[in-house]
Image (cartoon, rainbow, N blue to C red; front, side, top):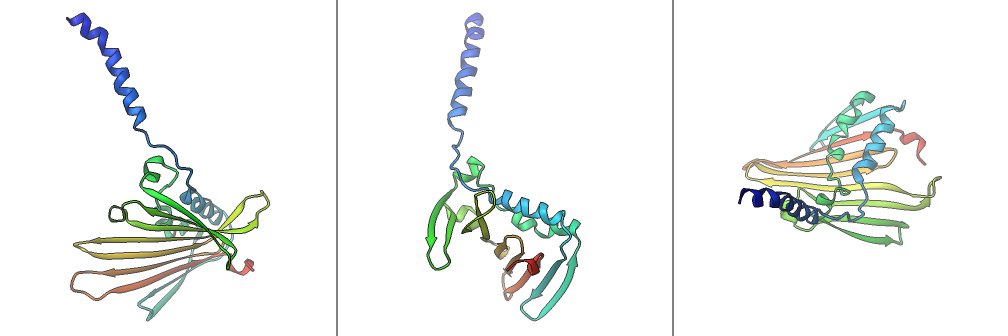
Length: 196
């Protein structure tokens, strides 16, 4: 009996391993938004741009500061937290829609969650220019994301815009139970004088 068990153990292990392989999610071929942002951050980290941050709360008070290059990654952290849509397990929770905007002459790729209630990021949108870059690819000009966290501790909404090679903007709205809504805006710019 013991010999039969030992002889069947490798077969059982092989069976369990093959079942696990079948459950592995397939790649959907989505664009890696995180790697696009990562390339931008790496470029700014090694540049000589003046990085300016303007923070305002409820449109009443503005603080303008210069950000050292070493702090840029931390300032752009919210964009680096976008879901990695090239990960098959993450991509399985999202769908992709594509359309061409004739007015702006851009392709718009939109990623939305299949189950909106389970995901913090409600929409990730890429605006892609019709013009070709030197390497023959198209340029992502804007990345737009909406993030909402709603729980018993309150409401948090972030509307995020990344303009390739020039700036990013995060508008944050928060509301605690029984308190008024607070809106803050964080705009960070670099290289704006070199963009037509």
